[in-house]
Amino acid sequence: MSTSPHRSGDLEGRRILVVDDDPTVAEVAAAYLSAAGFVVDVAADGVEALERLETLAPDLVVLDVMLPGMDGIETCRRIRAGGDTAVLMLTARTAADDRIVGLEAGADDYLTKPFSPRELVLRAQSVLRRTLAEARPEGPVVCGGYPYVSCQAARAGSGRRGW
Image (cartoon, rainbow, N blue to C red; front, top):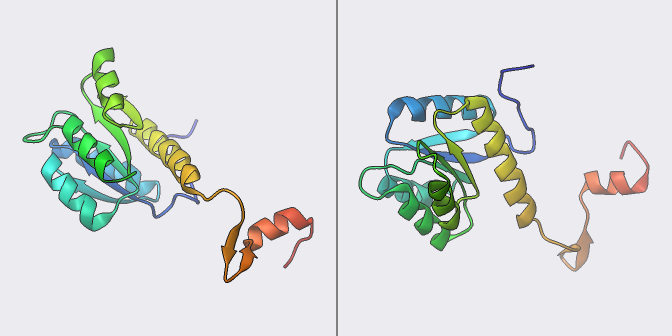
């Protein structure tokens, strides 16, 4: 079984903001997510996270619950109030009630510390696949009055190769 981070081509280059006041946790999470092809930035508290959210427009926020100042639950609520950015809680709080509070605040997933960096990467990929799939338009896309079909979709539907 491989222990190296798996690269997921369709997710490569997606932006992730890691929010944790423990520099070691933030560094490990950022290193593994970067190795998996993500563009990663780090914030140390909720206020900084909300500021970076505005400037970076990340696709996913990996968010600790126990942060100085504004905690992760309130930060998650504010992220949700401002848009649809995916949130993965990464926290030492392991009780079922804590997980429920995090999910009720709007988190898409919840991972407890200590954590496997490999599992963090896989959960981040999973959350992003789901949220990006939800963002895709349903039905035909019309561009300039004409239906738009990507070359990949056209090839898949035509049975022909080599366009």
